[in-house]
Structures are given as structure tokens and as C-alpha cells.
Length: 120
Image (cartoon, rainbow, N blue to C red; front, top):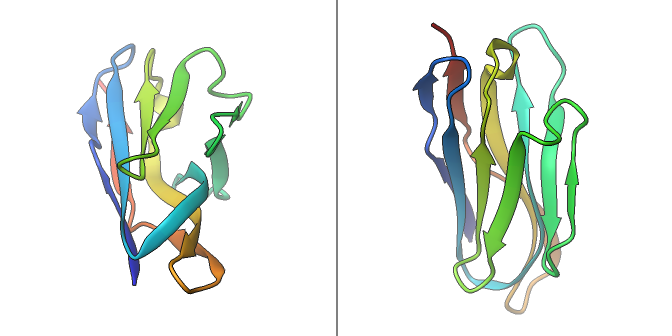
């Protein structure tokens, strides 16, 4: 089994910062692609940032220059540093990863999500 667990969400004032973490655990041979999506009430889910095992990154236009994604391959953990937060960043942030298990297929996994609220 593979689990993704997010942490680091919370309430922050506009202009503030938060750092989200997503740790993958279980029988993992390799985590190919890891990323974070977000969904605000009444809106479609948005892919915020992704990072490959080689370190290539991609960001949604709405967060470019403010968010930075990184990963620790040894820990199968991805981090999202969020700076200059805006009220429109308020959403549930969920981790998504494509993982190859030992002796198993490559599969898509999701975390349970963590709430980020940007409000004064």
C-alpha cells in the first residue's frame, strides 16, 4: 500500500507564507511525478505545481513567482513553499503522485488534502 499525507495547512493573513509538505510512504520503488492541486468551493480543481524525479518543475500561471515546489527523493516528500499569499489562494490543497511500487505497477495516488485559508 502507498499513502500520501499532507501537512502544513492553516490560516494565514494576506501576504503571509505557508509551507506544505506531502510525504509518500509504503512499498515505494520510485515516485516519478509529484504535485499539488487545489480546489476552492464552487471551483474546478486546479493543478498548482508539479515536480519530476529529476527536479523539473511546472507551475500554474496564478502562482508563478510566489510558490516554489521542491522534493526530497530520499524521503519521497514534496514541499510547496507559498509566499505572498492572497485570499484567492484559499482552497483545499491535495497531493498527487505517480508512484511505482516494488513488484507492482505504476499508479496514481492522492492525499486526503489540507485546508489553506488566507484571510485577515
